[in-house]
Image (cartoon, rainbow, N blue to C red):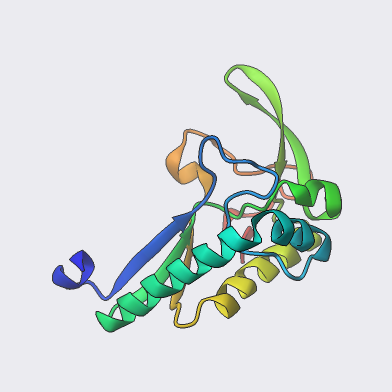
Length: 168
C-alpha cells in the first residue's frame, strides 16, 4: 500500500536469503529445486508443508500487488543454494577459503565460471518464475553490496572474468 501511495510502479514483496540461526541444510528458500531430485526429495520430506505455506503467502502478496496495480518483484540477497547441493551435486558449487574474522574459513560458493553452477542458477530462477504467477521481476543483489568484501567469488576459473560477465 505504501508503494502505491508513494506513486511507485512496483513493490518488492519479499526478500529471500540466509538468516541468522537458519538450518543451512536446506536454507530458507521457498523452493523445492525440482530439477535436482536428490535435493528436492529431502526438501519435500523435511520442509514440504512449510514451503507450500510460504509459496501460498507469497502468491497472495503478488495478487495483492496486482490489485493495487503494482508490479511484483521478489528479491534474493545473492545466488545462494541449499548446502545439501555440496553433498548431493558437488559439481554445482565450489569450495574456497577466505579470511573471515581474522581466520581462514572454507566457504561453499557459487562460481560464475562453473557451467554446472550456471545451470543450477538458471533452474532456480526458472522455478521461481514457474511457481509464482504474475511475478514481474526477480532482483538479485550480491554480498558485496552489503559488506566490505572485495570479491564475491574468486577462483582460478573466474579470477580474470570481468564482473559484468559473472552473471550474464
